[in-house]
Image 1 (cartoon, rainbow, N blue to C red):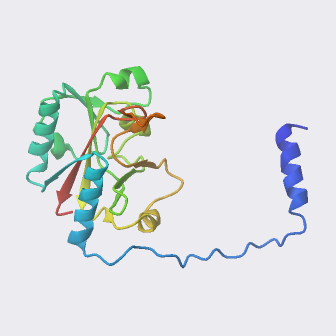
Image 2 (cartoon, one colour):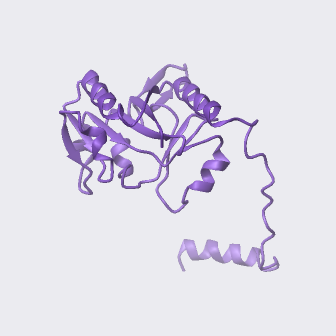
Image 3 (cartoon, rainbow, N blue to C red):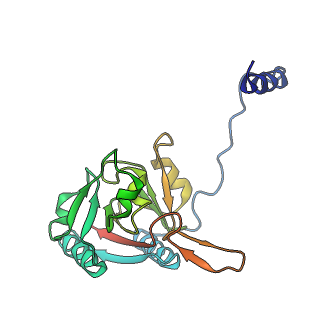
Length: 211
């Protein structure tokens, strides 16, 4: 008998006298702090993203390609990683070499990519959080964790919610969810902040209005 089987056996014996049906979980908690309109929710998202040191940009469908091209040029990006389902029009104005999201890409190969551009699943205003779920416009989780520069496009207002409970209702828990609140950062015991440890050093969020 393995250690796993012994432990599970102890758990089953301990729960033998418990009712088979679990009591329903009360979900009467607060779903949102205050009542905000769409414009106020988007402004709160922008403010909290900036508070986490993400760089926030605003544009519409006509300006998104030019904005992304300008951001890549300003960064000096010669290569950009592109998920398979990303809107091709968003990169129509950039001259950077496009790198496909491949299953066989190694961390070393991804580390040589200058930038990555993705969409998102949902954005949470109250926490300034972007959530990725591995959909075709977001690609594999690794492509947003290894490259040093991430441009994430958020469709406004369609992908913006006020709170985490509202976001959870939109997300599939079986998908590979990545929750991003600003660029990757950590602090040591002396509170010296170091960025780019567990993900991109620079996060730029494009709020794309009209969707």
